[in-house]
Image (cartoon, rainbow, N blue to C red; front, side, top):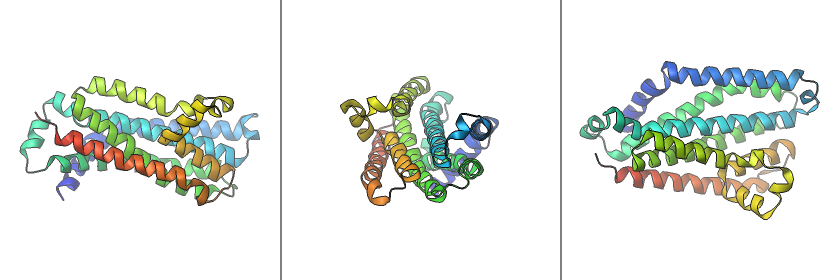
Length: 249
C-alpha cells in the first residue's frame, strides 16, 4: 500500500503535469507524421503492412526506453537536488517501497505511451496477418524494456546523486541500445553485430518483432531472446534494490 501511495504521488507530480503531457503530445505528433508518411509517400507506401508495422513498433519501443531513462534519472538525483528526498526518508516508508512506487509510475508512463500508439498501430498495420500478435509482443516486451531501462536509470540516479550526470550516462546507454537500428544489415551479420544483438535487450526485442511480424515465426523462435530480456529484467531490479539500499542522505 505504501508503494502504491508513492506511485500515485509520482504520477501526480511527474506524469499528470504539463511536462508529462508534452511527452504524450509529441508522441502523438510524431506517430501521426510517421503514419501519414507510411500511407501517402510514394516510396514508403510500397512497403507492406508488416514492414511498416515493424518500423513503427521499433520507434514506439525506443521512445518508451528514452522516456524511461529520463524519468529514472530524475527519480533520486532529482529528489536530492530539490531537497525533497529527506522528507521521503523520514516518512514511514522503506527505501525499497519508494523505489517500487517510482518504478510503478515509470511503467504507468509506458502504458500511456502504448495506449496512445494503439490507433496508429491499427491504421498502419491494417490488413496485416500478424497485427494482433505483433501488438501483443509489443505490450509484453515493451513493458519489460520499460522496467529494465527505468530501473537501471533509477539505480544509477541513486548511486551518482547527480541528475545531470545521470542523464548524460542514460543518454549514452540509449544511443548504445538503439545502435542496432542504425547498423547496416551487413555489419549486423559480423561477429560484432551478432554479439551486440545478443547482449542488447533492445536488439533482442526488435529482432523478435522482425521474426513475429515479418517472418511469421512462432514462439519457439523467440524463446531465447525473450529469456534474455527476462534475465535483464531481473538483473535491473536487483541493481535498483542494491543501489537504493545503499542510498544515504
